[in-house]
Every structure is written in structure tokens, then in C-alpha cells.
Image (cartoon, rainbow, N blue to C red):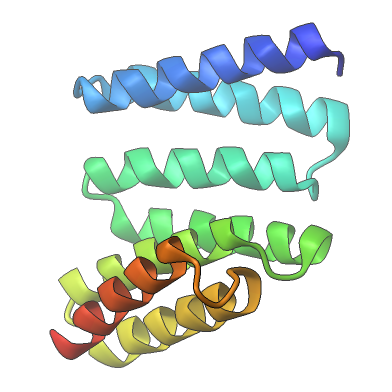
Length: 147
């Protein structure tokens, strides 16, 4: 995959996100699913970039109220990121999204566990004293306290 291909992919991904924000979830899903298939052909099904597309698809499914499907895709994306990188910040973001679904579904213990796991990732990857880390920790503390 060359630089031009990656730039085209980024543009298509942005279009998928934009379509979802405009409420055109069917179009957004089509864009993200095609991108996922393309990345699977190029990199293989276990590549983290396939996981990135799975996360994008899950975001759209949440907008459609298909939370259980979204949770499954978020889980697959997390597994692929972890296999490739260990802990990285995007994994904390995905876990926060899972926790939000669990909270909405009334699954408090699962939500708490995901928020705590996200906190552990951020503590691992964000430097102490970083303003983003402090703001993220405050947000996570507020989310857990609200459960």
C-alpha cells in the first residue's frame, strides 16, 4: 500500500465518518465495510488496520442502536491492536466506548471493568504530568463515580 493508497483510504474513512454524522448510516457502513475488505485483502484479516475499520463500523452500529454487534466488533478491534502493539491509547478509547454501551444497557460491573481497563492503558501509555492524561483520568473518574 503506497502513500497515495493510504491518502485515499484516509479520505474514504473521513467520508464514512461524515456520512455517519449526517445520519446516513447505511452509506457510512458501506464505505467502512468496503475499506475493511480492501485492508483484509492487502494485509490479512488479523492486521490492526482491519481492526481500525472494525472500530469505525462499530461506531456506526452504535448510532443505529445495534450495540451488541458493536461490542463484538470493538472486541475484535481491541484484540488486533493488542496483538500488534501491546497497549496503545486507541485501545483505551475503544474500551471507553464499550463501557458507555454497557452503562446504557445497565451492565454496571462490565462498564466499571472497561473504564478501569481504559484507565490502566492510559496510565501505561501517557506520561505523568501530561495535561491530556490528567483530563482523561478526571473524565474516567467521573464516569466510574456516576455508575
